[in-house]
Image 1 (cartoon, rainbow, N blue to C red):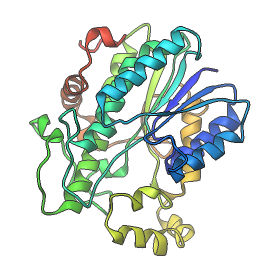
Image 2 (cartoon, rainbow, N blue to C red):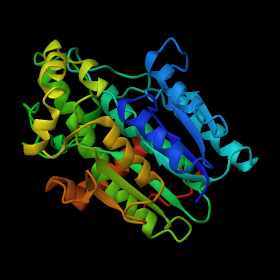
Image 3 (tube, helix red, strand yellow):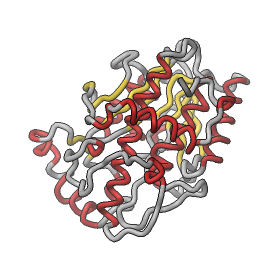
Image 4 (cartoon, helix red, strand yellow):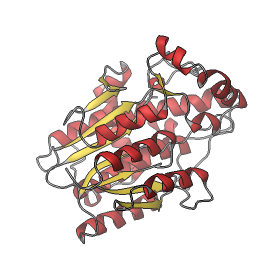
Length: 331
């Protein structure tokens, strides 16, 4: 199925490999790749451009998108929608919500929209992007690929100090304040965002399945594994994590994988992401995958009442009205 594929955070460790695979396996698709800095002064964007330049006949555009701003997300979605309407781009066939934020070395940040930055970038902006662009998919439908992590599951990740959980007052997820344990609480905010993404995706699939015009769009939320060469371990993290990556995780990756199958490199995860986005693996399936194996996810993530509460709160955070999405967002 040929169309337009959008990927956020396209200069990330896994993303660059996914782009390479998308270009090699489905070169007829148009790729709209978003990054915060489109200049080659950013070495990650320069690497992305080197990959895309190897396929000069492909339709690729690298565009600026700051997911910490709902205004920027809305403008981007409107621009893409208009280009599809004017047939400058073919209808969407996939959206890959890859970009993320975490911070384990500083107090939480508040975005211009008044939301804590981790939940805003990882979840709220991606939700807004998806909901605004569902009407730009073609009649054959397509794929939504979102990302979670083993950290959504209490006790599964070695960096966990405080387990992830959904509070009764959902506004607590979007608030900020000074913290003594910046690493522990920073990682908990990240883990909570990954739990929220997963639960929201379960709800999204229920709404999509009951909409006759959109039920050919399937959403998958994948845990791609623990990526030992990810630059995330060198971004907004204590020096200890960078040292561990360089001196332990990367050199010992072949050994570690014998006892920990989810320890892998970004190139392997990039293959998975491309195959899911192209609907080449698990065709038409929905829900949670750990690596490329279906569920189960954590007990809390399966609580449909909490999923629905998060769905409603996300609509509020993302400021989505009925006129701004083709999906009926309430039962």
